[in-house]
Amino acid sequence: MDISARIDRARLSRTLLELIAIPSVNPFGRDGDVGPEFGEVRAAGYVADRLAKLGWATEVDEFVPGRANALCRRAADRGANIDGRPAIVFAGHLDTVEVDGYDAPFASREEGGRIYGRGACDMKAAIACYIEVAEILAAEGIELNGELIVAGVADEEYRQEGAKAAKPHLPPTQLVVIGEPTEMKVCVAAKGLAAYTLSVEGQATHGSVPNAGRNAILRAAELLPAFGRHAHHLTCRAHPLLGPGVLNVGVIRGGLKPNIVPSSCEAEISRRLLPDETPASARDLVLGELEAVGGDRDWQLSDAWWAVDPYENGDGNIVAAFQQAAAAAGVADVTATGFPASSDAAYFGAPVVIFGPGSLDQAHSLDEWVEVDEMVSATAAYLRFVLDRLA
Ligand SMILES: [Zn+2]
Image 1 (tube, rainbow, N blue to C red):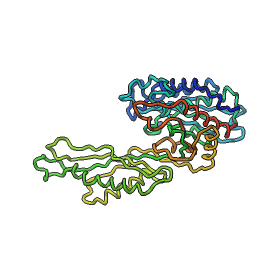
Image 2 (image 1 turned 90 degrees about the vertical axis):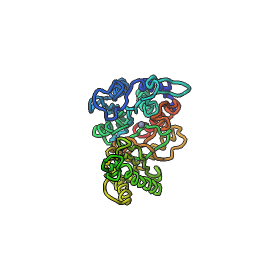
Image 3 (image 1 turned 135 degrees about the vertical axis):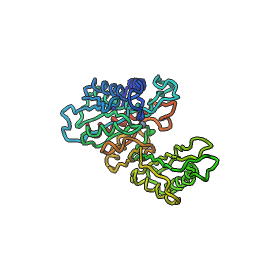
Image 4 (image 1 turned 180 degrees about the horizontal axis):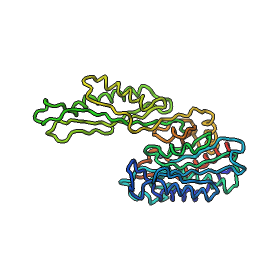
């Protein structure tokens, strides 16, 4: 029997519709009681409840108030790890980005084979697929010779605190599957991110006597071309799966009024990091370009104040096993590639494959959707991999 024929499309859709209807917006550093649509506690509760009903050992770990992971284990029916096979972890973030400007973000709906709503593709669809795998394993009475874990984690969109909090709770793991929207591509590397601030100091004077002061905005304008040069150098050094690192100047601010010489100017930049880079090593390169501009050291480049580590899977065997399972489940192209966005991949302390339904083109947009057909295919691939490795 082809077990993927057991996927219940209506149940799978319903799970995602219900997950979208539970708001779980990331508060992005805002403290305290920021509103009912923020935080992951209720979404974590939903995942834990669904799996507890199937006999899983579940826990909602509210590691800081309002922020929670769902950690759910399906211990092998014949005793956990009966033959010592390392666990498989299906991981996914429960948080979504903000909904400003989004018309009815939580009024999930299915239309024309797609499911719409905030979090549809990024990444509640994959969480729904994980639950469907659990439903099928339970309905078919399939015994596993190792642990299958579903980890719904908080805070992927900002500081990855959920994945960091989940890591010490995980047993030895052969593969963490993260169902981010990869358009069903098998991604084995992901770029990281580091953000820095360039602060330029000047001296304020009346705008009628500018030579009596030092104009921080004009000084910043002398320094900014260093970023362009650095961005150009990056294009000469590409990772085979991820391409080159990238620099973006995202924010500039300075000055008070047109008739005052500005005493300060700041530029915020972000660097997408390749797997062999760290926030500190990337900063050194940017610093070198700024220093080459010369002149007074009337500026400072901060350390990274926001960073997501890059990731690369060095375990070819487990990647091949996942590719094989996905191909057997009908995924047309299982060539290993890179995930261009940042993710939780570096924080689980185990090999990771990023593979899931939906596209980054819709993620974070004001019209998020995912194809139900892709969710069915992803579920088949996840299920096949579990059966290949643990059954
Ligand atoms: Zn995501």
